[in-house]
Length: 232
Image (cartoon, rainbow, N blue to C red; front, side, top):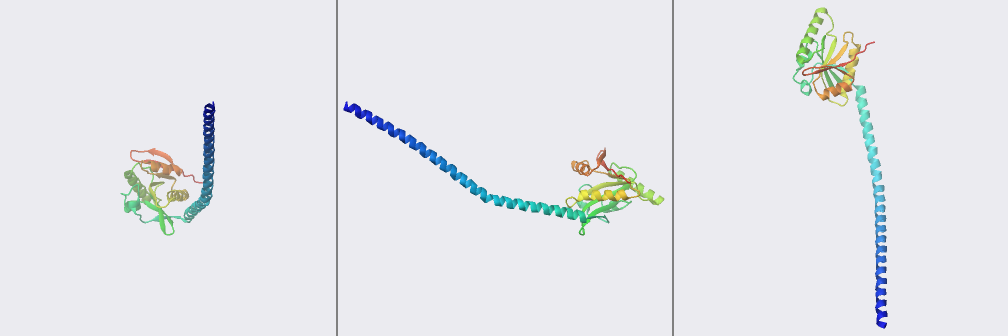
């Protein structure tokens, strides 16, 4: 009988210890998890507090840079002027670099540039005709004919201004020179149309469409856009 009680007591004691051990393990595990979470939260708050001033400083700096760029852009646009040029660097022309300065300045053809602080930031070349050309050969012929007629009749050259190439060296220069040329033609006594002789590229289409021109016609190797001139 004593031996039986002894065995029962031993088993109960062992079971009690096992249960307490499990509970203690769970308590320690829970405590460890809570401490870990608290540590991470504290570290996260410190990191946030540490980086928040840096983020604010960077945002302020970016805002200052944007404002400065906007001021610079409107500053140069406001101070720029349209001038007639005797020559230009044809190697810079992305559309028709093969046309030399002589071609661009004879038979009434002209080169215009946007000038700012003694520097040319955009260039546009023109021929003046009485018909809309579909290629450079027609551009040459039509402008020669218009120039000859004006010489014989003592009149100004052509009624249509044909912009056959344009490029910009400064952001906003292309749009600016289009606007300035538009104003000049609008004030003219003999010019009543502004038409382009543009390449068949997405860039040309996007540029002229964005600036308000409408597609007039698509040719074999070119396309013509027209800027509507409304004179009062």
